[in-house]
Structure formats: C-alpha cells, structure tokens
Image (cartoon, rainbow, N blue to C red; front, top):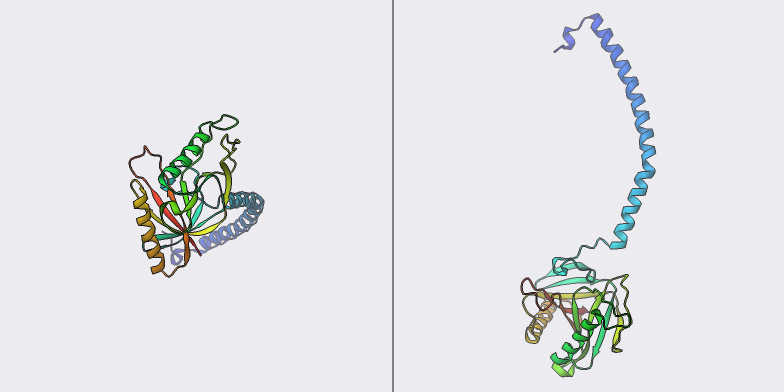
Length: 239
C-alpha cells in the first residue's frame, strides 16, 4: 500500500491530476443523477397517488380470521379492554327480516327466509352470495318474547340484490357506530348468549364506559355444519 510519506514528485502530480478528473466526473455525475431524479419524479408521484387512492378506498382493511375470507362488515379496533373490544364500525348495508318477538322459533323462521332468498327465492331466481355474520338485533327491555328485533345478513358493496319473493325481506342500512364487542367460541345457545351479554355489560361498566342498555346484537360467523373454530360475538352500542 502506498502511503503519503512514500510518494515522490511524479506520484503527487499523477494523484493531483487524477483527483481533478475525479472531481469533474463527480460534478457531471451529480448533474446527471439530478436529471434522472427529476425525470423519475412524475412516475413516482403517480405511483404514490395510485397507492394512496387504493388505501383510502379500502381503508387499509384486512378482514380478521373469523371472516374466513369473506367480505364481512368493516371495522377498526379502537381499543382493547378486559373482557371486550371497542370497535368503530363503518356504515354498512344489510338484508333484513323484522321479528315481532325474539323467540328461538321466530329467529329460525327469519333465518330460513334469508337463506332461501340467497338460494333463488327471488324474482330473478338467482343465487346471491352473502358473507357472514348473520346478526340478531334485539331491542326493548325484558327477556325472551318481550323483546322485538330483526335478523340480518350483510351485503358487500357492489352486490346485486334481486327483488325477494317474500315481502318481509327488505334492505336496511346500519349507520357508522362505536360498538363494544365480546367474543366467544362454541355453539351459541340463547342461554350462553345472554350470559355473555351480562358479562359484557359488567366489563363495560368496570371500564367506565356508557352504553345503550336496551339494545344488543348477537353475531354468528359460522354455518351450522362448521364444528371447529367457531366464532360468536355480542355487540352493545356506545351511548
């Protein structure tokens, strides 16, 4: 290795000339690199714009595992507490059957109406693919038959809905809302659902949150024949 102390006069002149050429090359490279960057800017800006529009349209939504790849209603997790999750649900569209009483028999009838509708019981006799969850919305104080509510299935954006043969099936909109959610597995019976509802209410109160006491939703994300990894939820709406 040639050190400065080992250089002679010719070596110094050679290195000085080399340094001058290198400096000139660097200046040329700097100018050329800048021009290349300027040429690339419009393409980068366009690419970035497309990316941002895509993110805004989808909201960065990545459906959780319990949607099983379906386009279920979109939400964002606001916070997690002991025993429940606070979510913000975006506005969504549903098909719905009202039930005067929320007995097991009436809910089953409503579910079958929606099921048959998706299997061709409509004016176009077409199948309609809808995602989970199916939800039972319950309103009014009291237990069992004293409540009233509805049974619904979500309708993803862009889905064509033929007119139903059954006039009791109608389209509804759920506005954006903050919802407190308790999740549990297994087969959700009415008794298990109400037990989880009471646990959810106690957890919300313990967290110092206020909620609407006379309304809740039971959500099921699985068809009856799915035996493993079932997912159920109870929703209570923030006041």
